[in-house]
Image (cartoon, rainbow over all chains, first blue to last red; front, side, top):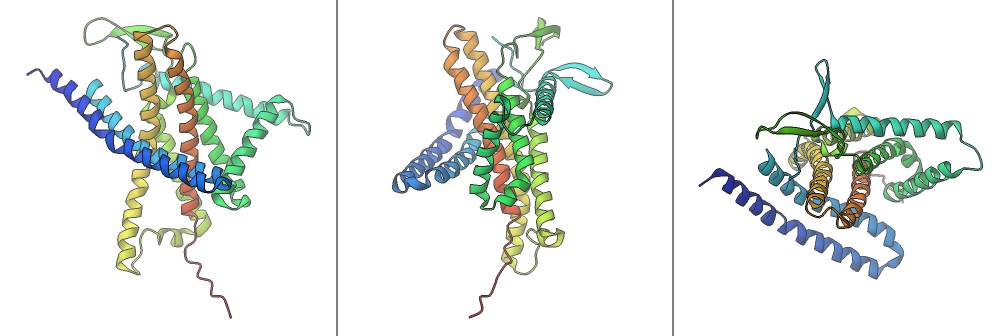
Length: 75
Length: 255
């Protein structure tokens, strides 16, 4: 088959499989963060800052998958 | 179909040095910051005008955030210049990349692989170039090491990574040393991936539905630019806090 076809299929699979785990991670971080704020509203801004930082780490994994997909597609 | 290239396209050459379109825009944002700095310095007064109030608000919020993370206000004043500079530079670069004219004004030169005349945009979001984000990541991590060495002394700081006291500490120290390098990669790819993906998204959406529909995506990109600048600077701050932390203080309380 044409290598172009394999490129398209690979790109789709990379993005599809590579973002499952980060999506779960971000959901869990968000849920625990919101639960913590609900239990202790006074510490809301501290919890929010820590939550946003953890969100960045989790999202970075999805970004790695995205970069690989972009490299496969465009390079 | 908009032409998307991962590499920033070169605009002209200064001898051996290639000036790319993202480098041009980063120079623009750099010049804007320098001009702002000089204006604020010359017009500083006890009763602040509008520009000074904006920056007073910004630095107040940032210092409060750093105090909350570090716990000590003298430390946050020490690290404030680096953190605030990284934050403002990345923020301005990201937001300038969304300006009208960036990516749409360009020159036509050369031939692409299909034989058609290639269109090269004159400006491109600086963080969409991996060189920019890699340089910033290297500078941030080098600052982390520098502040750690200044605060703890070279021997004590390097004993965090290379120690023979305890086989577990040796292994953990080596892992920590490796993780310093992965921090560089993680920093650079996080910022690059976010901004480049945003550019690709805006380009494709603008190509498919040019009227009204790109608006929510532009808002998303403004928000993502702010969040990524914030995350870059806050992560640098967290790493600085971890590197100057002194773990050897076992103070025996006399009964």
